Amino acid sequence: MTTTFPTLDDFLELLSGIMDNQPVDPGAALAELGVDSLDLLEWSFNLEERHGLRLGDDAIAAIDFGKPLREIYDDLRQAVGSHV
Image (cartoon, rainbow, N blue to C red):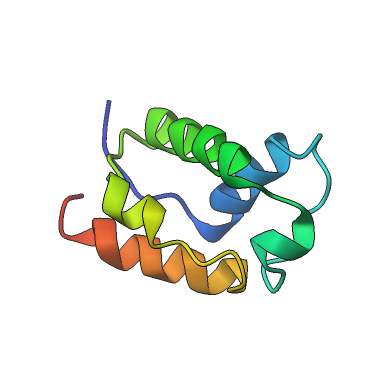
């Protein structure tokens, strides 16, 4: 499997998948969407599996539930970028 970081659309689609396929606004925060820590773990496992990534516990623990998803995406992309 080729390791690639997902596009923002892929990132949001995977999150939508754990939210009963509700639309996800990239400007919304996880807290606004009602995403909890267990949802975040499920989403991160799906992201890692689909894209062959290893996000790492530190990257997941650093996710701020009050930050817009677009910023979380950029933070994770930067954290993983050197490993892709």
